[in-house]
Image 1 (cartoon, helix red, strand yellow):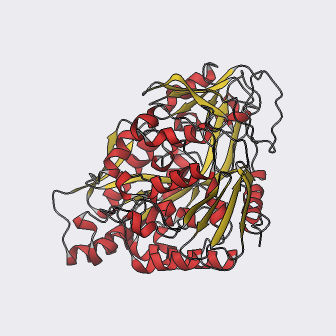
Image 2 (tube, one colour):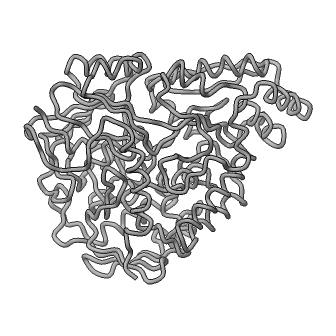
Image 3 (cartoon, helix red, strand yellow):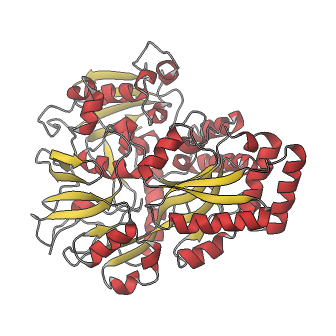
Length: 544
């Protein structure tokens, strides 16, 4: 049968759309310019952790840039619905074997052609163990991934990828997965020009993409700014409606907020805690407050000896119950977030707020202390050990909420807990990826595509690229695999939620709350839209 977006994709989009329409600030999806389309728009960002390669970009700082300078077979509109970009068609008879036809005449920003080989080569590069790409996990569904991803593998092409001709390639999965096409708008699945493979590291510093923008000459000034200009080779649905986008790298959201107030920065995605109480009046008619597919949590690595075995599990549960999430939300975030009841997001199809085991997310100081004592009876907590939570302090409210959380954990468990501050998000991610943490780390997830699985597999699947805590449980992996192979969306979501029951027993991470975007914009630009993933649609922003 032909892949139909009226099944899973539209079902997800409808749920997201209902959630967003209940909150003010945004406008309906549209792509009609209503202002000056020649002026450059400025927005805040963090310094990307790595070079700008599709399969090695798994954090928001780099992702914001990648999603403007690249595009894939599909993209996602403001509600999360898939829209064909490079795909002419994505067809399958059995949800395991896919034939993908791309639109003819498409080129990268340097004029080189985009062909089926551009995708096959990029995906093989991303999956091969020797290339050590952080997003390699996203290719695990493709037949032959196990061979190319094994340590020391000499094979670097997946059996399941075949080039048919310049505009056609086929994908064979290891098992039937009906939601595979929905993922194809994510960064990892972008194509690459042949020039990328000669020197991938150099390419990552000066990438050649195929999106609505391209990197300006010398445009990436590290830790300062990233300058993008319109790509005249792009003719998809996200055509630039301005003269370019310049990302200014801020280490302080307070400084960014002040810049928007002064009209020297046009778009700010995250209002700092200092502005939450007054941002709707400070930016009357120029603000948004809406839920999106994102959450916040605290990862406790499995490689820490104090958090291993039965005692470690009880300690994780005790920490989760030792602080009052709602109080922190009310006092620090002025009620702009919602307490988490599971590991995904309420704007997604299949969300269930009553998953068995989720009582460990409820504040209960007495129960927390009891669990901690039971853990100590098995394996005593070292007398001089400090429970640290590492976080970048350039993010919205990170310093404030972690300090408050640590104080409550200290009081209610009778241990010393404190924030371990680092200057930038890039620095924190480097520590996480190198497994250099001596305690927990602040974490969170912004959906890559609208699916419960996207909040589970990439973060907690064995060997997954964003599995910060090195968590591994074969029963959890098996449940995810069964969910992916389900013949219906409802059945798949049921299995994914059963997988969450396992997470509540193991607690590899402590869910905190669901995110909402509080965004503001300057007097220099027209109404700004924020999408299902909380990101501003910068290509659609026009100047007044």
